[in-house]
Length: 302
Ligand code: CP
Image (cartoon, rainbow, N blue to C red; front, side):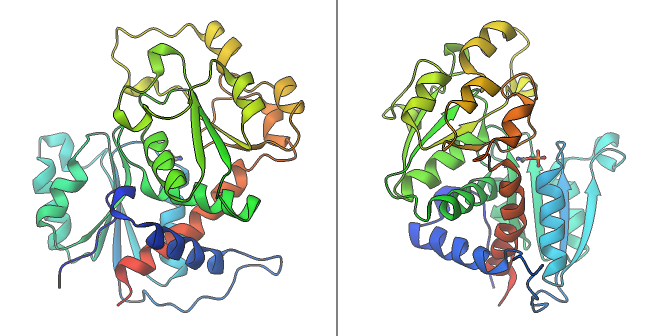
């Protein structure tokens, strides 16, 4: 049987998205604690390979897999034979030869996940791909917003910050639009997206305009690790026009505030914003485990 993959939000229909969000909602911890889950992935073996740093995605995939009864192994690129010149293809073939059912992969290079899915017998789960895709992040964001607003239909969501280098922005805009939301954005010219995906969306001059327009604001960090060395950001100018300060957030107590993390406090967001009455940043993390449970169930439970 061909393995199932999750490579891109574009592989998912609106019905697929709704079905994943519904399954994830059933996995969410309630006030009474964790729901008891049948170990439906017992006997399945999942390897987590992160070639870039991660806290939320790696931990939540590992937690999700274990809650479903799967066994997990973490591959650390640092200290592996990658450092001795082994090619990525050979590294993946080596992992595959150990009999894993799924590879949860984060890699900085665009296209690696699709290339691997051409020949791998493992299910490939995209946990972050260069500047292109982060599908489970988009799904957990949609789950968080759906819980908060009940429906995404007609809700106005503004994405603010470094959209140019952001795989999260590309994935989340795609999912939210297909769930019926209206998506706008603001970014300084240097960090504005140039791809077609954003061409027809409303663009705002600054974060204050976004706050006045939106039901929810989705803040992004500046992704310096993906910038060319020649790109220099004026941090003070950035903060003046694109940071969600404590004062600005306090003027909009009903504005839902999201951020995929990690947050760079004092750059795109003030610390006080994390205590705003409608800040959903930590709720996103909770949804992350449930959504990844739903995704693993869908790919690996036969
Ligand atoms: N949002 C996100 O991908 O966070 P991590 O880099 O901590 O996994």
